[in-house]
Image (cartoon, rainbow, N blue to C red):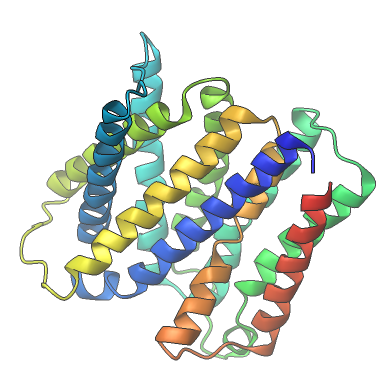
Length: 294
């Protein structure tokens, strides 16, 4: 496998596994402490892990270069933007049905891939284009609940505005972050962007007058695992975007984060997995394999 393609696929898989694991533990926290409190404390744990990793780098005599000049403003902006994405998604999921909203949000990876190929002129042969299209179709199908869609109780309006806005912002963030971090130290940039995202979450909690205390002890380990998953994901995709120009591959492979979430929910939460989801998981795995071959 070509080295840049290998990096892109591995970075995408890191994002997929990291975000998938974080979403699994989010299932066990949001209902208990709410979206804003989950957002603040999970990302605080992630920031703490980033700091520990940075200290480890320094102890190993590996530099963690500080950004320069206007890069600080960029990192602050990307942190605030990504926090808004999380907040809008959580708000939408609180209001509406996942059967409608999950596929809408998952579509941001398709927007990113389309812009990268058409707008940025990323090279892709016919087989790779077909594989990426199949991968995107699998992501959408994995998040579709046909029984929910058939339900007479289904309401398309609640939450759609928030998730639709989050989808557009997520696509903008991904395309911008790809260009911003390209050629830079991916660890350093991910560290400070993530720290600013956490700071923005605290500011949001203050504005919303959300009390951040009284987190049940049984929930705290889940917040730590959420933060760890997020850290892995941002390190992985930042590495991929800074080291390759294969934005479409990194975005779409990492966008399959529902695969580990569904599998973990089935194994540990005993949630049902529909035949459509099983087929979608198989399609995604096959598509990633084809993408890996280039």
